[in-house]
Length: 239
Length: 275
Image (cartoon, rainbow over all chains, first blue to last red; front, side, top):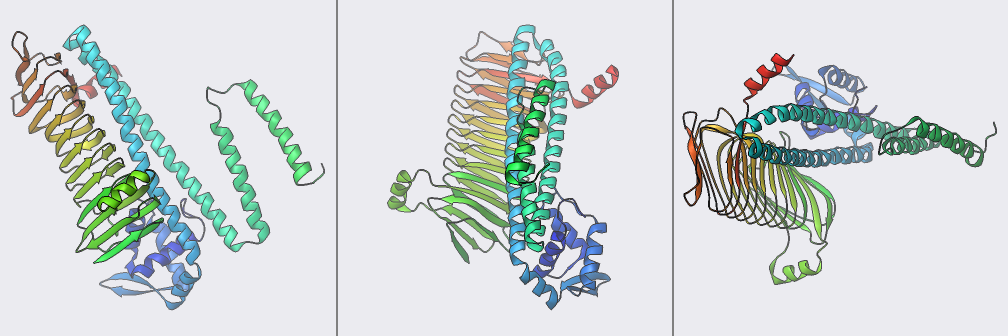
């Protein structure tokens, strides 16, 4: 299972890509890369087997043109896509949101760079006036090191953000798939999972000024209390 | 010709876009590159609908404000805004007119021409010619590699990381801050009235330098430049390296600061020595 598309979602998106136009495998991979603006880079090992399976199921067929396999949708494939139009719309909304997120990240990244640049230059200018040109250069060597560290930290932050998005996407699509195809109880459990996950994220982000053992102990006690209450009052089960 | 009037969140694809022109009054517009079908996505819209026209490859997006009626309606409906994301081919030239809207433009190599009143413009990896005009909005760019032309009243310009072929910046009180490399035969011409100018260049830059200010102080980290205090304007001039590029900064009362940074090679060697 690829990290970005939940189970079944990748197949759906492949059908959609082939509905737009018959394509060969390499094109499909490139399109996926484009639409995710590089955040998701599918490997041939992920795409080709799926295309082969879609073919086994009769949703897709291929012709060999100029030595390359060109895949296209069959009528059955088209019908399948029709059937799952809503799911596809949801998937596309998810993709659009992520594109917007990227734009926002870029804006913040550049703003941050410029802000720290201004600080650095102001500082360097001040140093230079105090110590003369040599002082400023020395100071710059030090701040260059700091700047390198800043860049690395930003890169790491960016990588972490991407990882978090991919996780979130996977969750959201797994959930949507279960909701669409599972029993009502499955769907409800999915919602419960989501509630719990949000809780965990919120609590994780809560500590502002560090975290000490005392706080952790208190949190644990409060959580145990809350769990008891949920179990007895809401789910009505007895120990 | 295709025409849309958008008054709710929508996504549209286009066959081919060769130029983009957008007039956005309020909200946010993001312009990103794509190798795929160009698209336009409105994720939020209130107040005036967006008019989109696609004809012969020319895409034009307008937050409608036609005529006197339009203006009066705008004055009443000041909360109208649109959040628009447009993806275009990397080499597509873009013309953007903003009033209070902010813009983010990334990864384009065609000409980018932006006019803004108070909206901020952020450019990342825009490697072609940049032409920016602002009244009070800030222009911040990272990773430039072409010619930049900047006119401002009080909006600041900041350029971080990149290689300038030329910079032509005029500002009244807007600050000019740059930390970029200068192309071998690059030309930098900066004029401000009271705006501070702070520029950092690699130690190895080759340029004819002339920094002039009537009332502002001038500081330079390059020992090769000589200061002439008794003249009016005060000047710091000289030749760095073999003087192939040119750097001219003129200000009436703004301070001018020219800093230097060690070349990446020198830094690397230092780093290795420290290990």
